[in-house]
Length: 447
Image (cartoon, rainbow, N blue to C red; front, side, top):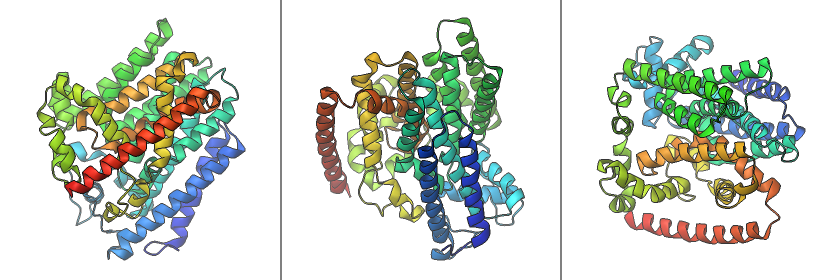
């Protein structure tokens, strides 16, 4: 069942994770029995994924749980940075700006011992908590729109069925932690628009925001730049909203500036253009892959474009980020782990995305204003990675999924019986199929 790792300790850890998230969910206002089943199914899928990847990193490639074989360069760097942090003789420190995640893993190892299993199980737990908090965001923004508990359960299911999102909980990458940090920040954004009435809820809001900021500081501090943007989009014209938003914005920017100074990235602290240049460091990812050849011919020299020209290309970049990973060639990324094949099952995301797009074009007119603000916030923040990387690094948009899911839930709850929605579904499916066919042929011709 679990070759390559200690069976009882690993299975025990997975069961403990499921019990922990189940208890947390049980004491949320949006708890339901259906939601509990969603968590159980998601936990099972994640457990199978972790088991499969542990087998691949150890038995299949000739490694051990202490020294697994990690072909993904990011995962390899984080793991060996963590080994260096605990004084292992084969460890190699990463550059300071990439040291945070390895440091977190090393702290975990001081409790569990050195093993590839423990950070994967923590990532699994982070994604399960994201699913729970996604229901909480929907609970907050869909007030007076029917049964809030049922809608929160739908939000949890829509979040869990996005395979790329769920899959991030089975890999030794930052994405699971970044997704958890951003979902906490997104939940705190709801407190900017609608200030919590009780002291307990206010304290919980600020604790969640603080934890989210700290995690981002360790793993991807450039995302802290998104907090002022979100604050502007969510803030209302009243004293409490402005005060809450200003404090959050100042906190996010201050932590980001400190992190940038500590990691010797002065370009991120400067003007917006300097920040953009400081963040777009992965041009090699764009140019060095054969799969990108056809697209690169279209946007050759993208990273040297001025801001206005990148903005002109943004619709195309957004379409690319929306569609990838493409739902074919499942074995292409399996060198990084078996579950990367699962990430290519993109059709559930296309279904959720179709609901979100319907809301953005049609359904928003009669929806609550807080939902409009949250959806706009999710779209703007999702577009930032598309702008920076021409849509080629779609995993950078994953943390914004819980901000977009409530709009999809609203469409399911309030718009699905309309004739306009039925016509939308037909047109969307036809356009999606045609676009995928064109993309497939372009990519195949470039290989």
